[in-house]
Amino acid sequence: MNMYIRASLAIALASGVAASPASAAHILKYSSDLSSINGVGAGFASFTLDRDARTLQVDINATGLDEGTHLAHLHGRFSNGVSGTPVNSILPDPSDDADGDGFVELGEALPDYGAIILNMDAIGTGSSINYSNMFDLTDPSVYGFVGGDMNNPKYSIDDLIGADEMSLDLRELIIHGQSVPSVGAGTPGEVDGTAGFKVLLPTLGGEVSAVPEPATWLMMMLGFGVLGSVMRRKRNVRVTYA
Ligand SMILES: [Ca+2]
Ligand SMILES: [Ca+2]
Ligand SMILES: [Cu+2]
Image 1 (cartoon, rainbow, N blue to C red):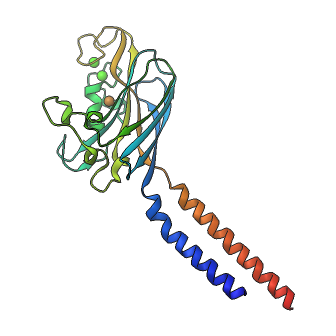
Image 2: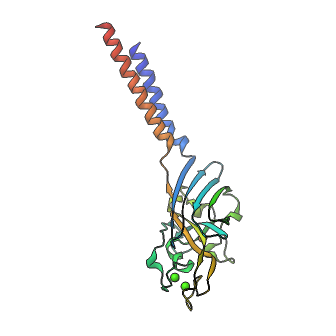
Image 3: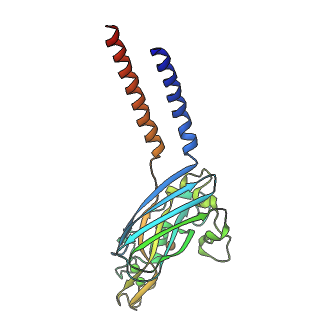
């Protein structure tokens, strides 16, 4: 009896663990801590990629932004600049302020995180953002033009998540739109001496990174629980026969 229970539990445990990675891999979860690029706001984003349905659920929460239209995009770099093999994108930092106006502008930040791959358009207009949308990744209209040039073809699902469908964590979420004072007169970019809300100025950015699969943790905890009950049973049996 004891042997039978142990054997059947071991089989159930082994098959459960073996089946877990294959079924879980159809749904991949990512998240992104959004930090301020130009001194305003903070936020968090989560992504759920369904490999079977070819959809990407995007949820973005942000606070402390300046009032105005906020555009969001998934940006990404490639081996030859605008196409080729996906390359890791990085967050811009103050050292990217090449024209010295005190702000990291669109053109100054672009080399770090690359072109727009997935276009979310306007995600909100106020200081707080609560955005939720599911993208059909088979729909060409959700993608940005290669290199931002409207005469070029559009990016595709392979550019966003790569041939192995695991490279979303190479990408960067960028939210644009921030108010600036009248500084940087005579310099290029959004900050050029005219005060006001600059819709293209990058305001929040975050690395997209994979979230540990909860099913894996659940399976591990169930596994430990089953082992524990087997051990308790074994101990009880010994006590009975002693
Ligand atoms: Ca600048
Ligand atoms: Ca400037
Ligand atoms: Cu962008």
